[in-house]
Amino acid sequence: CKGTTTPVRDSNLSPAVSVPLGTSLAETLKVMGEKQSGVALVTNEEGKIVGIFRPADAIRVAVLIEDAASVKIEQCLSGEAVVVSQDASLTQAIHLMAQANLDCLPVIDRQGLPLGMLSFETAQGFLTPV
Image (spheres, rainbow, N blue to C red):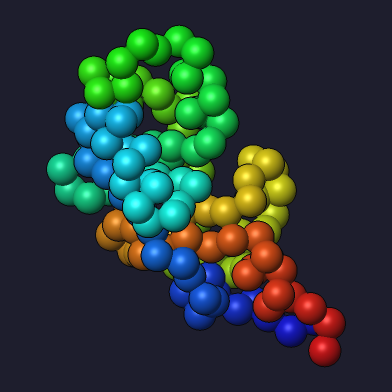
């Protein structure tokens, strides 16, 4: 297979949509809609990922809230953020996605800052037999 040792940084990453801690749920959904993204990375003051807001989170909280403008995004997150290093192989990234049942992963640089998003389809495309 080609690409089994290809580092994640050498794949075609999609732009990451991020919002800082303290952003309202309503604003987060607005940004996601504007950027046509199904995922928003929630970042701290240093720009590091502290959580990931996914569609499942939106569905889970939709029935519990009355005013999305008054709910902070960090109140809507479930679980820890699963990320992959830019230096990991695409094989490792696919394994991580499979373990966590995810269709995409945020890719972080050596300082822990987001570089972009890696989709399962993109990673899998690099691992096709030659």
